View (tube, chains in turn blue, green):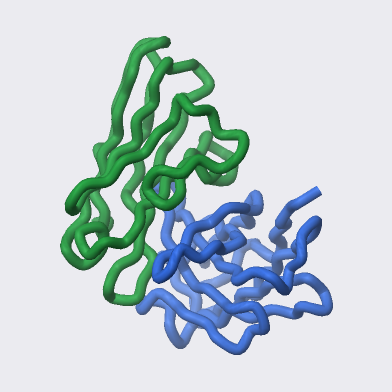
Length: 121
Length: 110
């Protein structure tokens, strides 16, 4: 079955760190760019970051540059998001998504169920 | 404040037609960038509905259609069904090198 399964969310204190994981299955992971998209409680979707096939190129929304790092391990068919200096406003469900290019634009054709990150003391 | 503007809510009776607008600017939709649409049933992951302004992925009913003109795009749903009740999001690309979403529209089937 083609699917993405996120894990690693939880409660973290402000200023803390967390690493999210996304396990991909059912498709050739190395053939796709991948992304993280988040959704704050009761709010809309927000693109976080993209990474290319081999992990050599990545892009971030400006507000998260320097705090979030997207990376992948193709041997494990896994995508990750390392988050540091977390703030209350980072509280959200974080979705792993498969990216498809429609140059220079992109869209997401496969989504995981998400993992909830709560930043609170 | 989202870069792409959508109405917070729309509603329609079963069998009727509704449209959801997505308004951008010259730095995104108006610059020629494609618009994509997602459906999200509350508590579940988003699902791709329309890509490249008008294209439906396999499995999406032809009751759903997309269009784009100038700095705006629209999603039309005909023959409304109870299962269409969900949140709908548009997405495009902005010249600031960023992927951007609309704020979302809640569709209520009366």
